[in-house]
Length: 371
Ligand code: SF4
Image 1 (cartoon, helix red, strand yellow):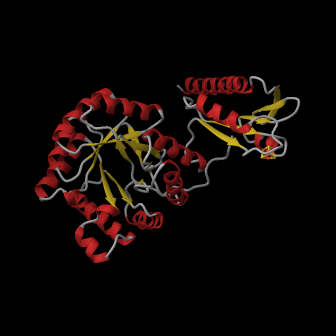
Image 2 (cartoon, helix red, strand yellow):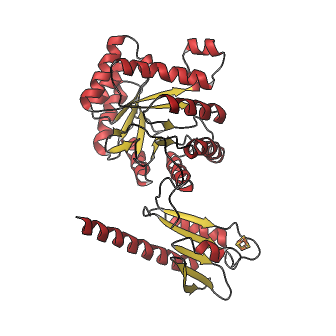
Image 3 (cartoon, rainbow, N blue to C red):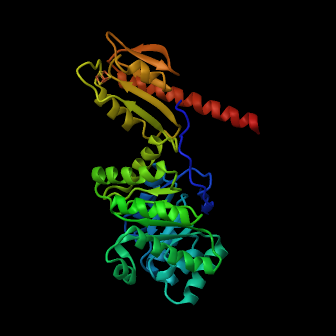
């Protein structure tokens, strides 16, 4: 029910990572990376499937050697979500995963070495319709740039990125996206802002090595939030020292907060206080857990009393306002029914699922009418 996002996105060239469009007017893609051993095909497939279930648009997998490349091929056959192979230095791995159906190569052309090897990788990418992600990281800047700048700086990150881009430009290869990550929010934001003015390709945003679940979420939200507010960013990865599924959840929550993407339930809840007429925190926790499977966008407010309840409920699809002897439920902003505290979570879940069913039906009807 909320208005569309006021953010004006930076125009960018659109590329495709498998079936997922990145850049242009495509929704900002949310991605994560596996942290299993790529040689363990079953474990890696299981983690990719969990990420896919959480809504991941793209998943990256490390491919450190040729054995891992062969595993990658087996993994690729067993999952649906597009896969990016993360490769450093060894061009032969890139050539092999290109044959095995990779959807995007994360490799820095300047690190491949001889020009004929760069040409071979770019030809393979072109032949198989695979884009490349140039990934510059403040922790692994080229030695001469470290010497020139003394320490990682935004200008050093951008200079490094432009060097890698130059390799692709010379081979007239334009199907790429770029990241300039740093663990320092100021450095990453300044580098991305500069890079955004220099190239037309999509940007992959990330604050690298951001930290654990809480600290990394805060750091990533500030850094990526500033860039997304500027309209910069076509795909995001929240780097957390945590279960990668959390990276997907945080990524979507970020985009939902900025109204850049809608997926699943957007909850609005008060922090609760002594005025609450039901246990807001416990209700919220239970609802979030029970409704994790929902992909249909829906705004739901859960507010403990009439101070803010009716106001928030007017802006949501379903709104609960605490009251005594019963709580008031709003549907589409209008008072609809009353719910007592016994069975509150069960009753609310039922109402929310019914609303989702109706929304899906409306969407199906619209599609049927337009065919
Ligand atoms: S909405 Fe009511 S219950 Fe919730 S924090 Fe405000 S005053 Fe307290």
